[in-house]
Image (cartoon, rainbow, N blue to C red; front, top):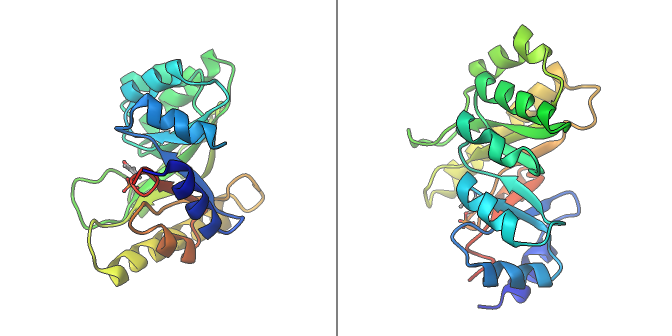
Length: 218
Ligand SMILES: *Cc1c(COP(=O)(O)O)cnc(C)c1O
């Protein structure tokens, strides 16, 4: 395993407008420390319990991303320190994040997660649900969350054109939301899509945040 070499190669493939989220899930602290010592500080975890444990053990200048499903009863464990929550898939969750952020005197950046994959099991909103959320009076009243973009996962398939189609759908969702709801909000600019197997395809389709794990630790 050559973590520093993998990191350098992946960073070199990304345009300046795309940020790498180094996915550290299922990785030992010693491996993550190697990554940190290579100078990288944007890490992602998909489970709250693991995220909190790693936060506690590692240097505090790491920016932590939550990339997996978030249950409302676990929000409070990450609100003191989380950098970006990629996986907002309901108004109720966003309201809970807002409430907990307020207690911590923070404004927490979030992405709306969309479901574009074929698998039934993947979390996320569809277009109608997202519009309903954004038009609600409850959303309008939130003061301690800031939507900065969208996130999605492509189908788990080898079919590149299927994956590209799903990334294009995400890109269109982003552009349409930007036009309708965030035109004068320069902060709404992120499209989180692409993993180890498809991040280059995601970049071609406008990804600004790629979430890469296994390719980094290979
Ligand atoms: C695990 C995970 C990734 C990274 O997957 P790799 O294939 O290891 O790069 C990206 N996004 C989410 C939501 C994940 O759970």
